[in-house]
Length: 283
Image (tube, rainbow, N blue to C red; front, side, top):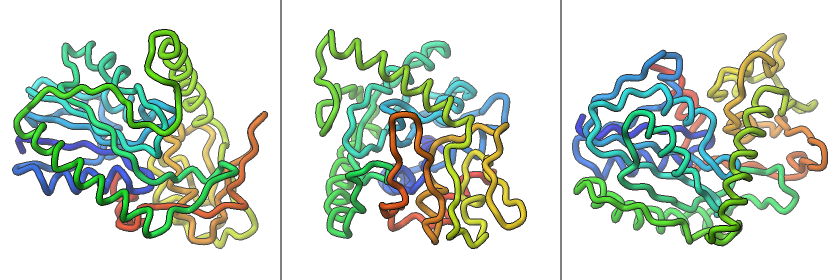
């Protein structure tokens, strides 16, 4: 394939974007990053290579960081990245460029798409309505029409993020502070990923869906109950939380931060099934 689109998606937003982009780019294929993470070196063959992923803690997900570090990009002539988010400011493309620099590569283009939020741990979280989803979907498709043209014609497009709903403005002083926050966010995410961040309450019926959608394979069913294994790193994708049919999976309170998952609902992209998410682990 002349264009390879690698994606990571916990609750379907980035998977939806990857599929829609594939429809628009001839001779392209989508490949789940997670399916390749067990390799020491990940080979690629595309002349154009893209990364599609959600924003985690203001930066790139743990799994995406691992993927890029392992990837051999010698075949590539053009690199692009698409980040999906709920509106938070994002400077993670700089982090990707830092990783790519070690391979004598850089992003030729990068884009951000606003989509629905799946973080039901927050007090003011509201499940997006069908109208919310359709409204964002319309804008996403319009943006992808433009992105398609940029990628097919290998145009350089590295716009500074300005379409965020919360975060710090882009200026030298605040941006410096933000970069420190991003590094802290990644460190905290990796730390939390190594501990028991989730648990199940009494509503758990032992269906095993959480194990199926767990992209890091941290969850193991034992005696019909999910166990988050301490020796396995969590990718913080929230698939277990959002695909649990009983809303039994919860996020623990952490010092100074209360979780409201018991009170709130859940979100997964309407076009992304349990099978769609779990298949990312298959080679």
